[in-house]
Length: 261
Image (spheres, rainbow, N blue to C red):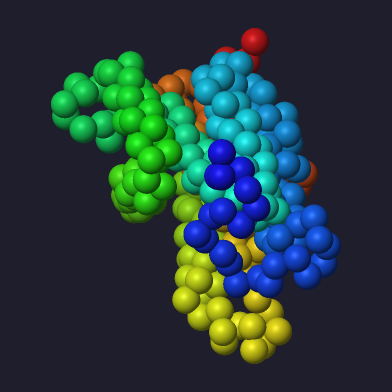
């Protein structure tokens, strides 16, 4: 029950605690999760045809991103061990659902023989075991995340090398830049806290939340496009942007232009 208590987590970020309000430990790190609540409902709307015609699992990804935002906000508001576990495990399950439902079959390990059902079940079992073990030792979750994250990043790199659509390629490059900036913020907040505190800006982890949401949903958009273009090309997937399709810094999504019902 001690895991519910404020400050029970061994992790504490660079932002000073309880500066803005006595109710929230890390104020900026908490409110910087706002995109996780605002972005997914819009993505559910933009991917309504995708979810209806291709796979409804895409909406599970967006809903889980909301839970990531809630878990992260709760963790930074309380710095509790329960909050840390919820934060890390929600990320693990986003990876699991996105990877299992959107990864093209040609990237499956040979042991699965292009059988998505076996692939999904295996990832589900792995994530379930990792979740249970993380309750006893939170460090295990970090290894589970690396197990899923590293192959995902490799697949993005491999796909981008083969991509012929210039618009998709540019989105991949943008995603890589944003992800690189996000990792820069995370490492600097964790390792060089004293330096950034002297510069009066101990809020890089809050910036990490904003950047990693943009990178995460962009990766999911890219995988959603790769999935349809390779396994269901007859549906005519196209990468578009909302609200202006001619401005590529808007919100990307995958449009299904053929075979609509």
